[in-house]
Structure formats: structure tokens, C-alpha cells
Image (tube, rainbow, N blue to C red):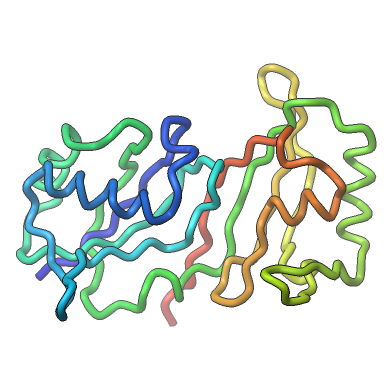
Length: 211
């Protein structure tokens, strides 16, 4: 048995692929690559995959993490050689590693996530909107009918250098723990900015360190 950990990018071609469809894409990829996937027990065995942190529909990323269990040990070079020609458009593997079989689930290790927001249209008063966001003591919101405070989930927010085309950009660091997850679209909503004029790209995941 082997637990493989991949860091991968989800690029423009996969931007509108949802969480469940991403799981299916990985299963198809491993089958095409003829790698020995391990399956769960029971009446409906499923491939043993574990994604660190679901990426909302419409976002891209360069830092996604997935753990995949294989029935047998293989070298990382063998796995890479098999996977690269089997990958679908929109997925690019950034790194390969072997993880401890009994390590905690990826979902429990993620503490926060970094995002880059690119504004496709000018936003008047963007700097002030960020300042107001950070100055707020509370940001009452509602998700799935339940009230919550968004403010503690915003760990950092700052305007950064524009992109090559001159579009304004903002960096966010949001909590991404179980039952305490901040979403960029909710932050934009609190700033009264339409998500439709923003491209969101996840740039990093903060993983809890051992010990």
C-alpha cells in the first residue's frame, strides 16, 4: 500500500469543473495511466482519494493537494511517467511525494488559504473598501440559512501590484479549517463588489506543522 500526495494546478480549462467532477477526472486519469488504485471496502467500493480543500466553482489554483492510495509501492518516477500522458486539459501536476499511510486526513491539516483576486473592471474606492473590511469588528453573514461572523475568517487582505494589463489585484488570506472557512466571494459580497468582475486564483494552502 502507498499513499501518494500530489500538488497540482487547476487551470482555465478546468475552471468550471466542480468538486465531484474533479474527483471523477482524477479517477479516470489513474485508470488511463493503469496505476493500481486502492478502493474502499463495502457494497460500493470507491477509489481512495482525499482532496485537501474544496475549490469553489469558477476558481483556478496552483496549489491544490490530493492524497491517493495505491495498492502497491511504486517509485515517484514510475508514477510521473504514467500520469503525465494521462492528464486531462486543465490539470498540471506540480510535485509528487509519498505521504505516511497513517498521517491525518488532509482536510484536517489545512489552516488557511491564500488567494489572488484580479478585478477585470475598475472598482472605485477599492483601498477604502479593504480598510473598512479590516476595521470592522464583526461582519455578520449567512450561509445555508445559518448566521456567522465572517470577520474572524479574514486573516489578511491587501491591495497588491496590478497585473500586466493594469487590472487591480488583491491578496486575501482566509481561514480554511473544518467548520471555519472563509470564501473570497463572501468577502467580495461584504465589500459590495460583484464576483462576476473578479477572477479568483488560489495561490497557497497553509498546512499545520507536525508537533
